[in-house]
Length: 276
Image 1 (spheres, rainbow, N blue to C red):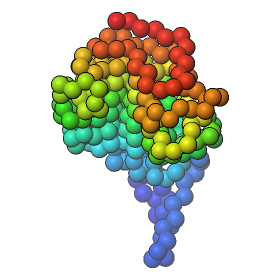
Image 2 (image 1 turned 90 degrees about the vertical axis):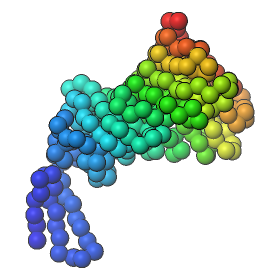
Image 3 (image 1 turned 60 degrees about the vertical axis):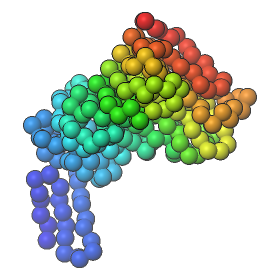
Image 4 (image 1 turned 45 degrees about the horizontal axis):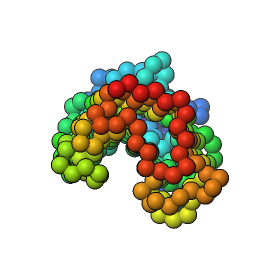
């Protein structure tokens, strides 16, 4: 039997353990999944669309979601920016997440309607890079009322393994209006905040060059321990003599403790703009 459903997917069934899904073209658009700005939870349909494994596009607009957005393939906003209104996510949530090598272009995460968030967008870099990654992502109104947890706009993490291939991140990463809750202890992770956090916490080996373009941050609080842009290598394992962290064209404004915090070796900052 062959049937066509409301998601414009042709499904072929008839074998108990086989479900074959066919789609014309190599790019799927969110409208084919019935994703509109009027949906109460566009996140479920968006995540199901990502599971197809095909590059996706999505028309500009504001979309409500009650669950985190999980990127698995190249995804682009069309005709402007896609804004996900993070509506009452669970405590300590992350608005958007990716752990694969996928371009994510034109997506915003607005946490105004969730009071306990750890980050607006989180990119796990535990994969071997094959190309320059384009990340054009903005997180805003990220608040964490739990003083035992941090609050970050955008987080880039290499958590478990080292790579000998350079990590190159293009696009623009922005974290604005980020507020953690102070706990009275300066220097610990709890209660800290940042607009953009680059955290290279690999467990072994060295990391080749990490090159990040255009991080942006503004209005990051509290003054106890808030940084606009934070580069962290918490293992204290120096890169080899030929490797370096390179941050190009960072901009930070109105960050209550510091504009840029560097806790990494061999770090180069190019063309920085700071407005206190």
